[in-house]
Image 1: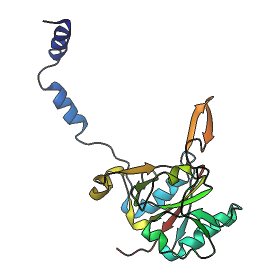
Image 2: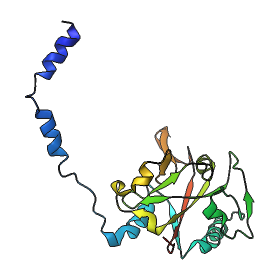
Image 3: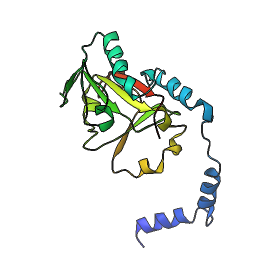
Image 4: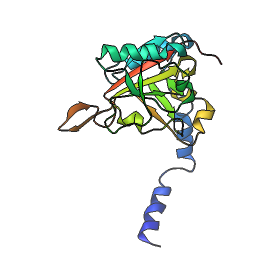
Length: 208
């Protein structure tokens, strides 16, 4: 018997048969989950966006037709030109962007980009994005100002509530707030690895 086998043999015999499985079953029997009442999903989500750890802003818009005006209001409030990268997302492309200068490609130092999140989580304030030809991932990390459109009806209460079809997609990613790091001399640096500003446009009224 090798030394490795001897050590593993002693470890295996240190607990009664099935003890670990029984203990694990007890721990997982009734896991704690933060309670988000059904009527508080949207307020909880918006509240999370305002936390210092998330550092996002938001505006509620009545429907998709109001998205360009809300984007314009954000740009004007931040003294930015009405110019942005627009991905080939069909839903975003159907909006009326008259008066904007739109870019088809995203520069490494892109000032403003807009994107659509397919869902969001009220518990954490996280936004969920799919990747694909109509939703390229890189612009969402290159831009300084990240504008994200999400429909209120797609927001779920907890992480576990994400619809099954989103769990099965080939690639998706989650964003919770602006980019930040404390790797540099222990000081918080905002925008070190991605957007410095995150502005969420919450679409209230959308068809099923």
